[in-house]
Amino acid sequence: MLSESEVTNLVERFGVEPQRTGGVLLVDDEEMNLRVLRGFLEDSYTVHEAASGAEALRIAEQVPLDVVIADQRMPGMTGVEMLTELRGRRSDIAGIILTAYADMPSMESAINRASVFRFMRKPFEPSEIVDAMEKASADVVQRRTIAKLVGLLAGRSEELRASLEELKQQQQMLLHLERLGTIGKLAAGVTHDLRNLMVAFRAAEWEMEKGSFSPALREIVTLGLAGADNIVRTLATLHEFSRTGRVELDVKAVDPSVVVKDALAIVKMDPTFKLHLVSSDVAPSLPSLQGDRQKLVQVLVNLVRNALHATKPGDKVNVTAALRDGCVVFAVEDDGPGVAPEVRDRLFQPFASTKGDQGFGLGLYMAQLIVLSHRGQIALADSARGARFEVVMPAGGGAVGARAV
Image (cartoon, rainbow, N blue to C red):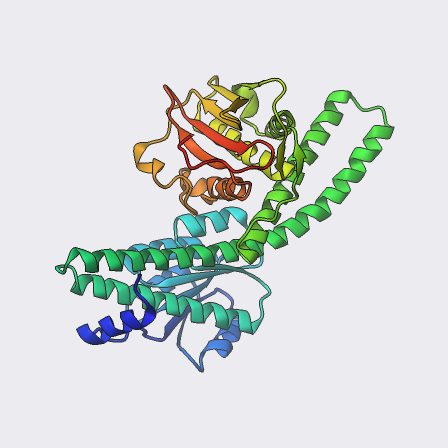
């Protein structure tokens, strides 16, 4: 692994010029917002301004830039659309999106399509903008420096190429952590709003219990609240991990059959559930697990939803729990097309979404973190057809051996 001093030595040795231009482009259709942002940054950066996405693209072709800060909701072209177009022309520039809305679809597009460095909610403190600019600028300089070094060292030995690749992976992991931190902060805000909303729905559920409502309607409300509660807990887990770097567990004795039952109850609220043939098979008298019931349910919910979304209506999805070699093995298997070979190696990596712009690519990553926190294993297992994911959990709180599942 190359240290910062070793990178500095390489830069000096090969005469790589400084990669920081100091240029920042502010994009907003409201003059007041541009004036405020300019006041934060003009002492340390060369500030350029644009009132629309189209104007920003023209300016970006003409002036040196490190970072673009854009409002999301602008007429004609959104901030994400503008940065997506800019990325095709100037991939070395970092983008920061500002929005006053908890716009989750826009955030997904920002991360997946435009590779936005940070997604910030209004209102914000001046220090937050300055901090984001410093980090984005440092990331740009690092990426440009690495690109220059890679070009200069292209013909050198395998050892040098391996060292540079490791450095690039380090930089990518830092970017992952930055994005996780951003999503974690947004998750905290969304969680707060959801909890407030659930208070009202809990009150409605209580009133329904006293009234003459049909059992079917009551079940729908109960399942909906269970699904919303699972989302709240998932967001809380994401925020917790982004803040502390670990997953906290509320460890108690857990019945594997209850984990399967709870997961299927939540997944029933997925619109595609009734379009599939979903079944379960839990072996009798399975030993209890020492674990966090909610987080284990979260893992199975993710796997079942992935199976539903990866298959067509009428396909089978089967959830099982059985004992194998002293471990409880949860499995989710489907009759779909399976996992493409080019995707297998990055299934459990952060932001490696297989759904294009429809997901963050964090589901399997978070599932793996939870399973590893329980000293278990999760993997894509060999299957004659479709896809089969297995979660191997130690019975009685032990640890699963280092063997393939």
